[in-house]
Each structure stands twice: as structure tokens, then as C-alpha cells.
Length: 509
Image (cartoon, rainbow, N blue to C red):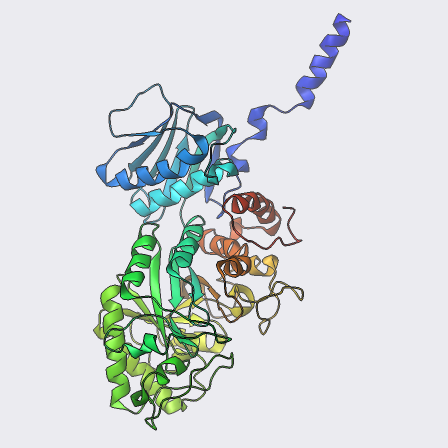
């Protein structure tokens, strides 16, 4: 009997992996995938005696942010400390280091201390997001969980491959209230997205208050696709969104689409039309029929007023001038218009972003061409000295249906399941558009078919997660088979966050 017991114990010792073997730091499910991970023996345990230490007063707001993230699910106080902390208790330390890039960070996980270091608060913030991913997904819940929160020891060194990692939200076709935009900001921040481009105006609605032209919102903002109620952001609302996003290190880029996609403005003011007659409000989905009167001085007075008010409210470096699908504008007038629009934006201290059609015009220094449809336009922009923002519709447009059974979304660029959204790289997408030409990636979500925040989440998630990894993680470190395993774990996190995401059959959720 004694020999049998010894034999059983020996078998168990070989057949049951140790906890350490099952939980190497390199087996993390972080998205975007970190640049470098080194394993170390042991675990850091987040328990009731744990503290958050910040080594510079400038880090206090991030220490509070981390405390607010971790306390609800753990039930722990997680007291904030500066240099005065209890040395025997577990510590999460936040500190500066000059050795990191602007958005880079390092997490050094030891048995008694997890240390997040970066050269900027932005880097620290991204380190905190990675820490969230390292903890059990129940950390996202708002009530106390019966769950141990342990992290395998090791070191993560990380920094992004591209500086611009963005999402675009169309609030013109259907309006999304301020609180919905803020929720989207929170979800984007979890995956280290750093830019949110707001498409504020289109044929169906004008969504930003311009005090010098009040009928833009009073009339032009009154409807939406299908004839809904519409809506708009007051300037106070817009500033609230910007401030909320800034705290999550997301830059807001506003877009005023012109000279086409402008019926909401043309319906609001007769002076913007060459015949000096207002148009009817428009609630359908056809594009390419509207244009500002590009030969009228009144049009440029209008644009100057709009850009001036917008620039005064917008701390970010860019204003997007649209420029797409201006089929009703003669090409010679279009070229002149884009030239003048760039001048106005630059005169108000901002840089220009525009859809790839703007490459037909002269491009000013620092103007960015957003590639969405035609490679030849992007190449033309590069020849004129512009950098390119990559948003190819058949891979990056979040409003495309996943498959033929998807109830909302469009399909003019084809169906885009999560593998098509992930299995491509910016630098290899098109001949002649090389890495040095590209500032980053953006995933637009057009709103013709979406009405609620649940609709928004369904089309955005999980595809925006893959877009985030494309922008952050070098192509050589990305593989679909690895990604879909990490994404499966993110499904549980999204569920805990209440996200209405698409359960693609390509992933074992």
C-alpha cells in the first residue's frame, strides 16, 4: 500500500503542472501584444494590504485612476502613498524614467512590487491598461468578487509601432449623445487607441454648435437618416468630450466635411448656395449630390468662422476638412476650394487632415491624406510630400457587415469578419506606400444603419481591437492563430464591461 501511494504521488507530480508553469508572464492575453516579455519565477498577489505608490506628485491623478479601476472588484482600499509606504505590503509603484519613448512603458513584476515606469503620463497610462489585461477579467466588474488577483512575475517592455492609432465615429448620419461618445472613449482607451475622429457634419445633420451661424444646429441638426430627431453638441458638450478624452490620453479630431456632404448647411443658410436658395433637409443615404458654392466669398467667410470657433475649442493639432465624394463640385473649383480650406485651417493654428481625394489639390506642409478608397490618390499625396493615414475601406471600415447575416451595417466594400480586419499590415498594403510614409491607422464607423450605443458596439467590437493591435504591435510579432486565442479571453472582459460585441464563429469565446 505504501509503495502504491508513493507511485500515485510520483505520477501526480509529473502529470499536474505547477502553478508557475501554467502562468508564465509570456502567456499573457494582453491586446495589443507587447513588444517584449521576459519571464521570472513567482507571483505578485494583489491583496487587502496592497498599496499604490506614486514617486512624483504629477502621477497622483493616475494613481487615483488606478485605485478607481481596481477597488470595486477587489474590495480593497489600495491606499495611495508617496514616499511613505509600508515596505512589507504589496505595492504597485508608478514612476518616471527618461529611458522610454513618449508612449512607451515598462512593467517590472516582482513578488512584492509591480513597478510601472515611463517617461510620460501617457506611457504610465498605457502601462496601467496592460496591468488591467494581466489581471483576471472580473477586475472590470463593479461589485466585490470572490477571486484571487495574481500576476506572474517578469518584465514587459513595450512601445507602439505607429504614433497614430485611431477610431472615427460618424455622429452626423445618426447623432450619439455625449455620454455615448464618452463610453466609446473608455473602451478605446483599454486598447491603447490614442485618437478619436468625430465626423460632425454631413448631408443629414450638423452636430456642432457654431455661435456665429446658429441655424446650422437649430435647423441643420434637427434630423438624421430616416428622419429621426437629430441632435447636436453645444460647445460646452464638445469641451466636455475633449476633457474626458484627454484624461484617457485620446486626442479628439473634429471633421467638417466640405465642399460636398454639406446639405445640412445648405439647408440652413441660403447664402451658401450659388442660387441663394436653401435646400430641403435630407434624410436618405445617397452621396455626392451636394456642394458649397465654391466661387462665392460668402462661403469662405462661413468656413473661416466655423474653423475659427472649432479651433478655439480644440486643443489637438488637427482639423479634418473632409473632401470626399464631392461629385457635384467641378474639379477645377474643387482644387481651388481645398487650397483655400487648407489656408484657413493653417491660419487658425491647426494642421489639415482630409480624405484621399484632397491629393488632387496642392498640399500644404503637414497636411495628412487619409487613404480610404483609391491607392492612386494616396500615392499622389506622397508625391506631393504628404504623409498618409491608413483606413482602407475593405479592411478598416467598421460599418461593413461581418457576413450576409449581419442585420446592420453596409456591404459596398465587402463583408469584413474579424480575420479580414486583422490579417493585414499598414506597410505592406499597397505598393509605393511604405512605412516612412504612414503616420498610422484609423478605423471609421459610419452611422447610416446604427442608431444606439448597442449598435455602435456591435459593429466596432471586436474589430477595433484588431485595428488597435495593427497600429501598436510590429507586424513580425503578430499572428492570427495567437491573436484569436487572446481575443477569446477579451470576450469575457467585454462581457463584464457590458459591451454588445459580435461573437464571431472564428473565435472560441
